Length: 391
Image (cartoon, one colour):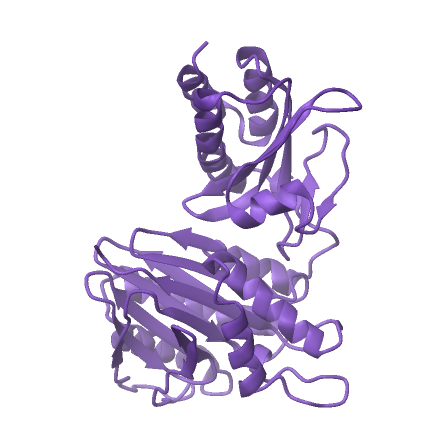
């Protein structure tokens, strides 16, 4: 059967399968209808994006850690990685990254009886997006995939925070965007959010105050209020004002959030921003890293009835913006040295050759090396936006 026909059948099977059974249904179709495929196994990425965990019943292999493994290389690069057939069983492997609109979910491991021909290789290249899209739709309807990606039990505060996130990567013709939150299993109040429209990209980074469930609830209220205002058509200044009023009504100024609210025009790269505190913006242009210096306004919820004044700057094609919470630049080593401005600039510069989806993790890894590899004392958010411009 033609490779193109196999993709149609895989898509149909994945779309109609029960949410919890997508991997088994897809694997059965691939093995039954595509002669080159002998086995199919699903690996899902953990919250740290460092380990790929097999789904239960997926073939008996253990977790995969590190970019040296073919599965790790496929996940990091976003491209299939083939290992030719050889001993001991004469079966080759093709590691196919599973993606949904740029968001990386895991890797599909195909056991193949021979090298793929040109048509089969092209179909395998499309397979990850077809299956990844179906898996993303199924994901919220079962707990199976969330259980599989957890290395240990998550705190309630972290559970609340992770459910707020829009994903970890997204891409369009004009941009590539990725965000990461650490520590994965015990975060408190930091968060990021985004939304794409035909003419603009909306983005926010929130540096919540406090720890635990209390901080998570405050951030949930802030993010929910910003989304409500954004979905009502409000511009960044009005979004900040409405969210600030709602938080102040609930907490009377005793609790507040420092939030960066941004809107990027897709036609010309004009950024409209409201900066209410500690999230910091760095711009990489060529090999030069500079802080985008915006005037800080009062945090959301500190006062009521504030009018927030949007500020503007412009992106050039090839620019990279990196937004970080204070848990990154204020992180301290065991000998009490702050990660600080210069190491942060260096980390941004050193990651310039990485794709956007790898940058947040690379910067957080550098920060953790500065801390000596210890567990983070504060939440850390890094968001990377690569601006391609509209052709």
